[in-house]
Length: 151
Image (cartoon, rainbow, N blue to C red; front, side, top):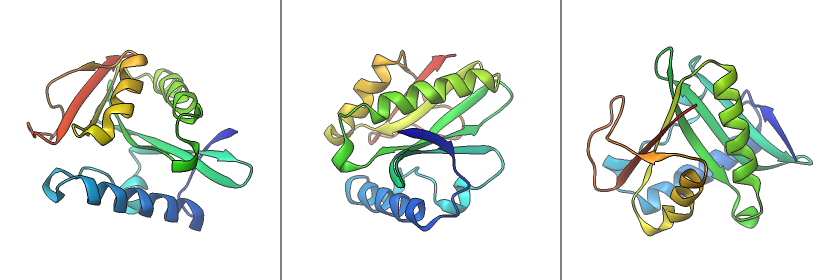
């Protein structure tokens, strides 16, 4: 497996992210959906990585710069057939290293509160994320959980 900065121009990553958004729409109320679409992920303050296994995308994640010291983890996903195979841990470790290299002091995230998101919350806890209040433009929402950690 290799982790690459992705410009989001390939059809495979577009399909991968489309599946991600469709899955989230089926689980999360529309007013609580915070996933970014392709256009938002291509904005200059976002750096996006894909995890490749050969020529196949098996995972992805992004960092969105909120300010000089604070970034948000976005679009973290592992393909269904590779869940619990180490892809997410490999990627999250890489993201934390990159966030430090980019001189961020804090990395925060929003994820779902539903049972479906429990494995993600456990992964973030394992990597030192603590639960926190809403940050940036987020508001309290029973469908959302907020987490943060210092880099």
